[in-house]
Length: 287
Image 1 (cartoon, rainbow, N blue to C red):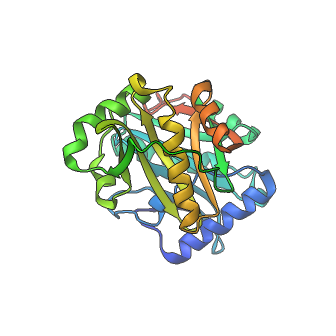
Image 2: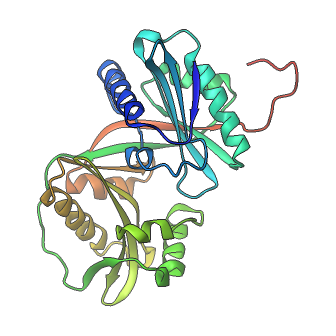
């Protein structure tokens, strides 16, 4: 049966982790479950949906948002329970949650190899919005020669305007809720010769490091700053005990992909982002 949760219990988290392992063992690749967010829900809104039968979690959808406007949905159905309509029911309920929470857009993340996931998105009339390569690094990169003029420091609220500009230039839309990353000290400002020229947000979950929101001012690209910073933060992750580092890059961003692969990242899979319609369907419309 369907369960809507504002926060998952420890038993629920273990059940979702077990489901993730079963799905990845069967399908390969990975699931883009944001475990750091999953373990630290505020409890103020529904973010997670479970489908449980006889005490066993057979399906899951998680809802995350990095800017408060766009929701990203990741889901999984146990391989032994597919074909029963669980995925359709979970997705329909998740769309209702996104609508009720006032999101302007909801993106369903589907591994490119998942025929069932693509079919589910298409049944809901969701067009492809964009695609990303999921990359991973399993060993420290070569140190290279760090430029002493390039430094990293923790971001503060005084950096809000410059980080907004950098991220807007890099990703095409203004971010929100940047201050949440300041509290952890893992949103960093990249400075070159004393001038802020970039930013990156680091996240650690168990033995995996994550690199997010990595941007370098276009006026300072092509000088090796990005490669220098990426080497440093990845080596720091491994020095602190991480076994792998992950990041995503938009399909078609060959410049960034070339940077990441030059440091040693390899592609795990490609993920397609489908734009789920949030408007209520007219009576009598099936799907």
